[in-house]
Every structure is written in structure tokens, then in C-alpha cells.
Length: 191
Image (cartoon, rainbow, N blue to C red; front, side, top):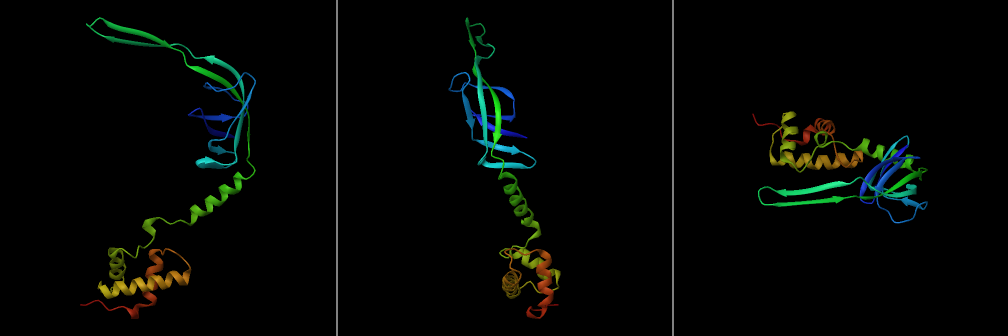
């Protein structure tokens, strides 16, 4: 079980009883802090936030305030007699993760999202009735004239099939089956 949490503007992967250094936090040594901006959780199932997962909280305890190792910043312009040397020590806070809470509702939500994703069809598998070239493709496939009247007939037929099947989009197979079933409504191919 772990979570990706945003602490002081940076993202960390945290687990139970993990110690880590983060940018300086307000609070004294021994204080309890909690973080509610959880970007991702893994507890048997993966829950991704958009942008954050609601209901999950990461609790931590401040262990110490320290400074990081010194970083030397040296600037020089050759042949100009210019050189500057500065040092920097970043202020850090050492924390220990005491718990990740709020997982009761997470598996149910993840299951709902998976079922929704399974129902979504790709654009290649569905027919867009506003595109003439897709309508012409189906008419030509069934040896019908690609006239304006046949395209309009196919559009009205598509609307009727959508109502009949109670769907918002139709697959290519469903459109072909509807054309074969109602072939007498179309004008034949001019030979």
C-alpha cells in the first residue's frame, strides 16, 4: 500500500512508517501534520485522482528540522577578473509517515470507473453519421449508389436503429446489418 502525495510543492511516493526529507514545513519537532492532496493510491487497486483523490489523508510526524549539504555556486567570466563564490544549504524537514487513511470507499469507486471504460468504443469502431465519406463507404460496401438521397436515407435509418437499440453510437457491423435489413429503401447502384 502506497500513495503519491504532494508535499510543499513536490511529489513523493510514501508508505507506512517511511522517513523522508521534504522542504521546510511549519511546525515544531514532534508535531503531527496531515496531507490531503493525494494524486494516486494503491491499495489492492489503483486509484488515480483528477487532480486529487478525495477522502484519502496521509498523516505524518515531524522528526527534525535540518539543513541539506552545502551546494557551491561559482560564477566566473574568464579574462575579465570576475568570479563570485556563493554557498547554499536548503532548509529541510524530516518527517515520518504514520498512516494512510480513508481507503473504505476507494475500491468501489475504482470498480465503477473500470466498467465505464469498458463500454467506451474507439472512434475507429463507430460510425460518424456527419461524415459523408463514412456513409459513402457503407453504401459502396453494399453495392448502393452514393447519392445524396441514399446518404439521407442512411442517416434517418441510423437514427431509427439508435432508438431501437437504445445506443448513442453505432458500430460498423450494426450499420451494415441495418442496411441489409432495409435494402429496399435505397436506390440501386447506377450501372
